Image (cartoon, rainbow, N blue to C red; front, side):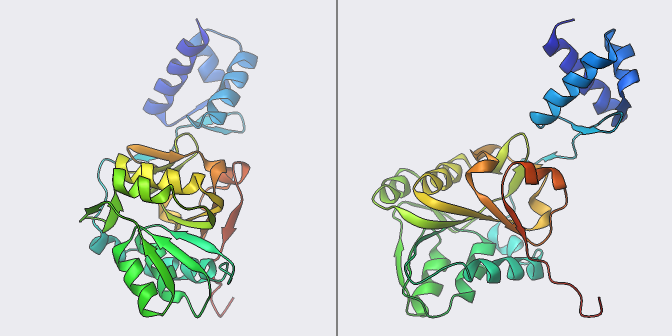
Length: 254
């Protein structure tokens, strides 16, 4: 049996049973346990399964077809988003030239911004208004307005981005997966996000715990291309790919 055939047999068995031992997989594929262990190491690195002591479990990643609209998302995990946004806002200094991505967590970052000499570029209509009302210097990208996320996307947005270079970028994301990286539902939004990351010296993905092990249609970048700021990390395996900051506050009684 060829390696890729073994991989498919392993993944098929895990899809049925959700978990299997090395011995079970060796019997299923008609190969040695040492070969299965090597296969599990390979598939784990590829993000196609979770390797555990003595065997493997199926990925908990959930493939998502649709993205909720911005009004719905604004009311999800509000406290977590506020903690993430507050910490992220504290990372911005007077000398920074910042890209602020459209999104509900990044919108809260804009709300938390105090007086600063930093300059902002955003593809979020609401984000630009919030920053402008605070008296901060802000540019809004040109391009097509996507009503469901209130983001500027398309060729015009990409052309606008290419005139800038950023010290820091603060990005929204809908899915984070070991295998597929940072993902979003809309390929056009993914292109804008990817271009902003490429033009930034440092990039921070703002993502509450619910975004992990979710996969959407369009990949933005691989995990090492950005640091992650989250309320809490639900799966420690992500630390092997990039720097992650958890900002969840302990309860007062603890």
